[in-house]
Length: 236
Image 1 (cartoon, helix red, strand yellow):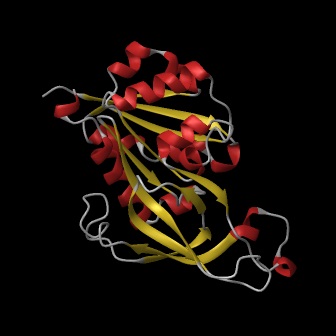
Image 2 (spheres, rainbow, N blue to C red; image 1 turned 180 degrees about the horizontal axis):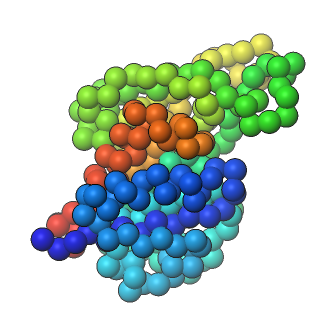
């Protein structure tokens, strides 16, 4: 059997601990037979030969910028069958200035509602709210999330803008609150997949910090997502 090749691309805003977060998953990839290459920038996306031989890209790059050549390389690789996955801002809040990247991924972080203003102290905890991850009917059947029940988190709750070409496996609902401007509860996709050409994409929105990634449900979804997104024989 040919060994699978995984490319881990990390960087961007340090608040999401790109090194510590990705290191958490390297043993899983290696124990599942992947040869793993780690890159600290998106320069590798412009290397067509490298990406052509890559079966899975795991990205953890919050905000930052991507060049036209790099994005073209990433998009072409996914269309040709390279899997693409990540969590939280490392995939859903990357390259804000690139509408083409948003088109590739299918959903983009907009905000994370916070506590009542009088309770805010100025740190990241101001945006930590208790919320539920609710599996959809599709999610209860999909290999990435099958067998996982609805679960609770106390961390950032992503409000995501998205299109309808994504297959939503789990959602989270933002309730109305007296200090917020919206007038009815808003449900956002929290875990989704996307078929793009011959490639598979998996986005998992929880993962602000390592402790969230260590949540058994979050970790299982991310790890299963890596396996599912990986290039299939029919895409080779």
